Amino acid sequence: MEHTYAAHFAIDVTGYLVIIPDLFGYSASGATLDAAMAAARDAVAKWLCGAEDRGEAIPLPEMLIAGAQTADRRGYG
Image 1 (cartoon, helix red, strand yellow):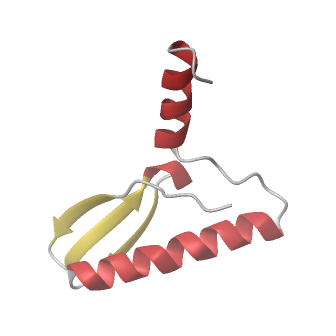
Image 2 (cartoon, rainbow, N blue to C red):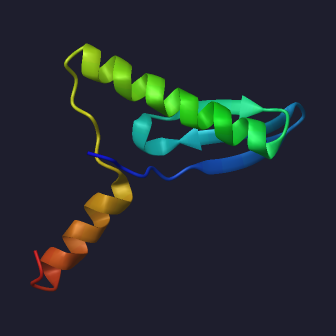
């Protein structure tokens, strides 16, 4: 199953910081926006593989959960 996680971007003195809130605040950084995005993709993949290897549940993206709750309230779920 493939999920899309939201990312929050910030600029700091060393470049760009990317925070993935759905993965318990996991973050990555890079000197450029492209480097930060690539580092974030790698970090998410490693986080998810590690969780799977440890037998931990993979969290659903918050936006997916919010969408399902909205659909349920509207009678679509």
